[in-house]
Length: 206
Image (cartoon, rainbow, N blue to C red; front, side):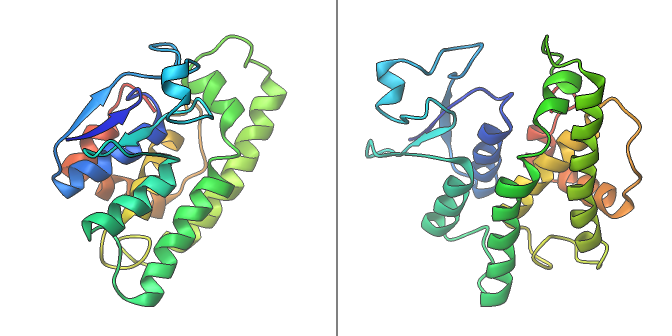
């Protein structure tokens, strides 16, 4: 059986768990990642030298890491969650890449301070600057979603919507007054209306 190593409070772990649930594939999950279980051990580093979760272990014992890469891998090997039409496939991969390189790279300080409440992340100037940069990225997503597509690549739900749905969930977990983004809000509600979306975008963590 497929196994996922990682804690459910990690947005990157939840990407993989959501995909497996959408695929209807049974799996086991093993807690790894601070503060639950330190991945900087020889056992874990042999699977991922970056000491990061998630790690996916297939039933043949092979392992892979890097959450967005794992989404592509699952879509390709299971034959679902990726558009078949070439341009729509490109859009899904484009927005999946954008989530990893543009969106997720700007929210760190605000998430640590406002969502997770970690000591030392309480500089209001840095929080404000972080939220400003995050809002700029969200404006890009809002403009795309405002074109009227139900999902980022068109009519069909894809792996890109898993990564983006969890990212928008994180945005709405910030306990601050945020810029109104009606298209992103509607997209968020559509994502949470899916059984797996509701499971992996709960109210108690972002």
